[in-house]
Image (cartoon, rainbow, N blue to C red):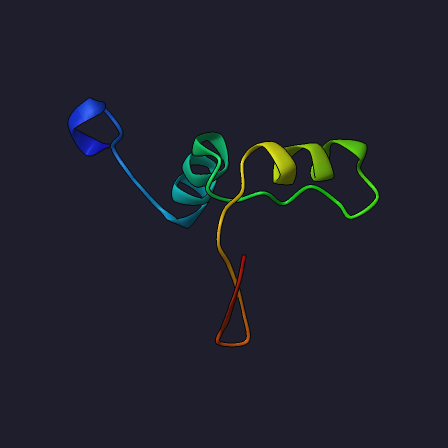
Length: 53
């Protein structure tokens, strides 16, 4: 990202980038969009050293 003009790449920038790429889905449990995103774009999530598909 620094090659593209970012002067500083920190944790907030990386987290936002992962959200934009669809790697992180942090919609609230009550959000109607959450389940739709999960159904259409399944990903692997980790919880306490267990992989859940």
